[in-house]
Length: 510
Image (cartoon, rainbow, N blue to C red):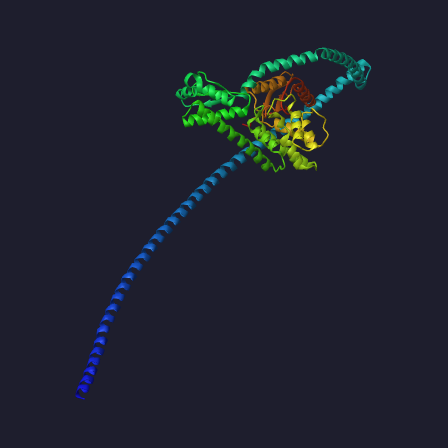
């Protein structure tokens, strides 16, 4: 019993001690945690305040920069406005000065007009007196004398003109064919060499003569292998840093150029490598030709063309005519045909197709014995193109009869594309000579003081003396010059002749 009581007392005392320990011990720990949390919160608060202050200062600096920039722009704008105000003021002063000058000139002109009117009246009076004297002496009125003179001159002029025309016609019939053949042969002799050089040569530039020696190879083995593989004649002369590729086929020349470029870049130049590179380049060029043809047909919205026709269209990229790229010319003609057909109420897709295909006879795979228009028509028939398109291709140079409305459209658009200023290249000397001939032809007429060939020779300005030619004579002069140019000169498109006659009265107000 006592033991139980002691145990109970000990339990109670121990429980009390434990309660006191846990209460006061845990409270101290709790207070310590609270103090640490408050200290940490103060530190975080201070850091955050510092960050906020830093951001505020940065924003303030940025805003100050922006305000300064805007103020600078405003200042510049104000300066520009001030300059404009100054310029406008100067212009207003200039306008006022010119207005005053114009008023002075006007007053002077009015005074001169009054004097001229008086002199005109005096002249008419004198002419009337002279006419009356002549009528009294001749016994005929002025109108009767004029009619008799005109009739006699008219009959004489008719007789002389008829005789002159007959002589010219007879002489022309006798000599026309012979003279035409002579002129054609002379023209061929003079321009054949230049034309052949322009259309059959590509210049390949190299960095040094060392590379030129490597291209030639030992005893010329490399260059012979390159000529055999490409079918292009390679001319190596004393010209520094250049090799000439000569061939009539532009595709072959392009293959040879690209192959040479790859060989020079690679550095390995020997017969086996040459054959490998040429074969690879030839395949690339063929793929590019087909891709160009496809891209062209897609761009123009033309569908259903035979693959061979697409290849021929792509091949046009490497062909030129009078310096004009054939593919560009075909695209241009196709677009023009579509526009013209739309305006006329015809099928624009058919017209565009005919315009694109009209020159396919210029890029044959074999040597044809027909003109390019007829050969192109046969190719179109071979690849199942419609009859009206085939006729438009064959008739665009009037080698066959036009049976569809597309044919004259293609013919006209082909001429427009070729006659566009800058479309076809001319030799500079020939171009300058043509302009000089135009000016000299007009200067040969009496009364002409100055001539100017402008608009690349498509317009001729003729200035005549006001005291030498009257207004009616200017009209006949422009007609005569136009006829003479048409008869004696060769030119693309048309030449506009403008005859200018003016009278200037200049005086100075002091």
